[in-house]
Image (cartoon, rainbow, N blue to C red; front, top):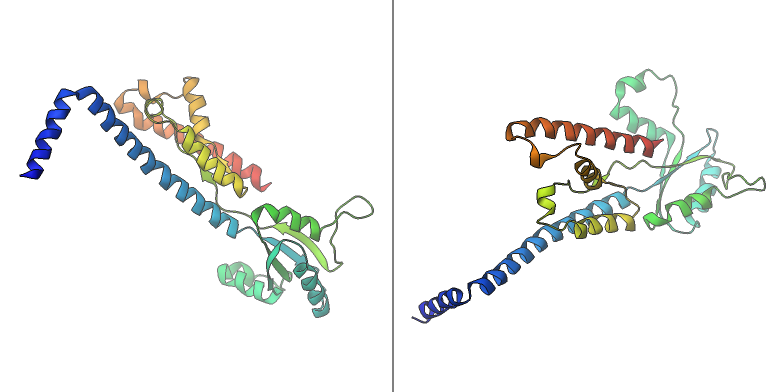
Length: 247
């Protein structure tokens, strides 16, 4: 009885003030939609950024003739370098067998082991990667950077295989959802860890504003063909960004 009474009163109240009630319901629904989309985006972006941060390494290659005493001396140097979290030594023999397992045919053709002894250095934070590198390669009397130990041959950043891509742009969707807060969240989290974000949203918005691609004014049977053209261009832009990053 009591539940039925409340339901009847609620319906009667909705009929008396339909517009305010509809506005209240719409506000609640939009809020739930925004939170439902916003929170997963932030969580996914943070997770990806943390994964990338965990892969940031410096490879410190030793010279071919490095002796055990040289290896110990370089290890001691790296251990006392500021902002170094972890050091992992990979001998040339271990590196050879690891690579041979991945590509046995190629390494069977080699007459000798071309790989050097290597220290893999993990910084305490992604933002300190360059500081660690600069400490291992300080500026010398000539004004150029060189190894802090004569047994160090080369220092290289380990390549990163993750790129964040923000959302796509659509005129019809942009009139309903304010994407700026999502873009701010994605780029803000990525900036904290120095992760590159491919600006798909801005690229597609520019194309739309220039009427290069317009999904809203194309026939339904042509949308698949237009989408293929758009993502062919997106793929080329992304490939260009990756090529510039690895050069």
